[in-house]
Amino acid sequence: MRIGMVGTGYVGLVSGTCLAEFGTEVICVDKEQSKIDKLLSGEMPIYEPGLDILVAKQIQANRLSFTTEIADAVKGSDAVFIAVGTPPRRIIGDADMQYVYTAAREIAKNLEGYTVIVTKSTVPVGTAREIERIIREENPKADFDIVSNPEFLREGAAINDFMRPDRVVIGAETDRAKEIMREIYRPLYINETPIVMVSLETSELIKYASNAFLATKITFINEIADICEKTGANVQDVAKGMGIDNRIGSKFLHAGPGYGGSCFPKDTLALAQIGEKNNAPQTIVEQVIKVNASRQRKMAQKIINAFDGNIRGKKIGILGIAFKPNTDDVRDAPSLTIIPILQEAGAIISAYDPEAKKQAELQFENLEWKENPYEVAKDSDALVIITEWNEFRALNLKRIKEIMNGNIIIDLRNIYKLPEMKELNFHYISVGREEILPNQSDKIKKAS
Ligand code: UDX
Image (tube, rainbow, N blue to C red; front, side):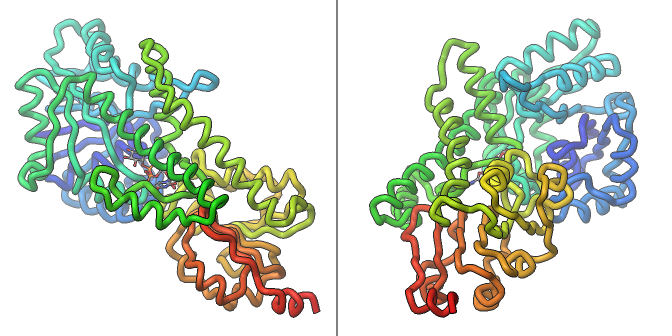
């Protein structure tokens, strides 16, 4: 068994490396020579825990190789995966398919013998059939089948998600293609991982529907958090009480500053577009997109409100810039919306993120980057937690209190316990939970 992986972005690199770990020979191809050179020298283009070690192991074992020549990855391979980007197009928001279709044409020219062409990138419903048409047009004699095999990898947990998935979704319509896919995922088959064999269109839709559902779940609990704040209920307890019901489940019910990242914003937009194109409007998803965008702005307002509406000249320390922990990805991160609003209102911002500085530096103006959470806290009027990195959960809060100028902590991820913050006498504002006000004696102490 030999696999060609076209595209060494997030999905391609993780999938290719993990397939090699399954024992298959994998050849990854990317147009950018510099990217390939870096990979070969052990430098990862993305931050993903454990990926560098796995890539090195598979190169060493001669199962994983990299090339810029698509022919090397296609000729003689049993399956060729398309894992190139499908970024949202400006204005309309639907997926830009040019990289996928270009890859399909190039693959077509190099096909030799029976080959399964697999779409791994998240692609609109109907793409697999369009790729089939393109390949036939480009190479009428080609012997191939099209398969849809969407990824469900979470950044920061991608290797585990690939090796121990909840399910593998395969859209395939011939026995030959199904057989090759079963062979590729044999180690998971042995583990009794559910393999969902469906039609091409169904497989493509499962991916969008799953991501849109999760985005909806998050947005739902975020709006419930708003009710909690107004009524004195506690959103974490509400989520717990709901999540115990097996039909609901406890995951993706963490209220926060709104979802971000490379998938949910893009996939919800694309699904709304697919609905519109097919005259099957996705009004719930359309609303989720709107509510999430306004939520991020609302979080900036929450911070401004902590200063009674006037944040001019205040020093705000930000902990966490990445859209979630264990990644350096800042795509559509809530921080990108929140920080500029605070700056516009006259706040002075310093920030720390364990991994995202390099990716984020160019996105912000006048932002002072610090090397650790304590540097951020020093002399700040308020500390704002935007991303729940583990290291922020174990801060020495007594020390933080001493070195801050003010005593406000705004925790947009609910990582601290209310009694703890009460005990330390912080002015503690979180999401969907009681606001803790410092007692008067402390204020007097600070003022004197
Ligand atoms: C997601 C999907 O989980 C994955 O299956 C898909 O293939 C790609 O998109 P990812 O974007 O890496 O993965 O991150 P995920 O852990 O799903 O979080 C997405 C966003 O939702 C983050 O901004 C996160 O902070 C937010 N989130 C998640 C919440 O605000 N609350 C939650 O309860 C869960």
